[in-house]
Image 1 (tube, helix red, strand yellow):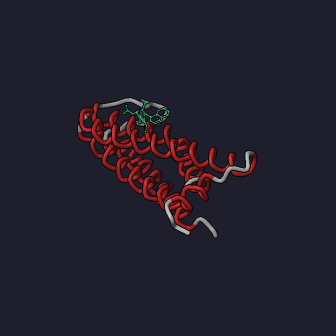
Image 2 (image 1 turned 90 degrees about the vertical axis):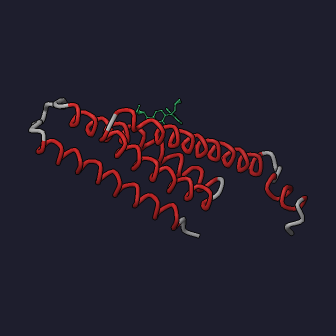
Image 3 (image 1 turned 180 degrees about the vertical axis):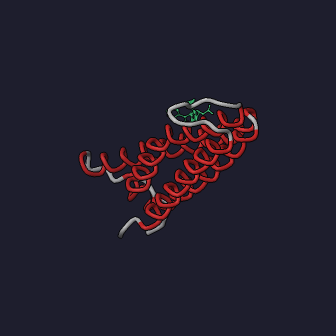
Length: 148
Ligand code: JUQ
């Protein structure tokens, strides 16, 4: 089956990144900070850094989202993806109003990213053990739980 939910979360993620970039463009106009300058009033610097930080973590997020979604569980992964995107939006708005405001959403996003990385590792391990060690942990677990 096509991973439709992962695709939908990915599109949402791209739109969120576009929204952050637009906010930087608006902040440049509002505070008269022309490229290549990347600094200005504190209000501008916070919006600029919020966007830069979200972009820095975007490749990690997307790769963990897809690895976890393909190898572990599309449902769990997509849900984590939505939580991460929600957290990043709170992070961006929090950082835009005060440096302190970014912290709670940041810890939340970090935890969600760890969960995605953990699910990725577990999923890849389960596939490896099934294909190369001929040990199907999922099958064994669901049989033991009486799900068959
Ligand atoms: C680096 C590589 C992998 C991380 C969590 C999970 C995996 C983050 C740290 C940010 C920011 C923003 C700011 C979303 C203690 C291990 C990771 C990973 C970090 N952690 N920082 C920072 C720059 O405003 O200060 O966005 N995001 C993280 O994860 C926690 C880190």
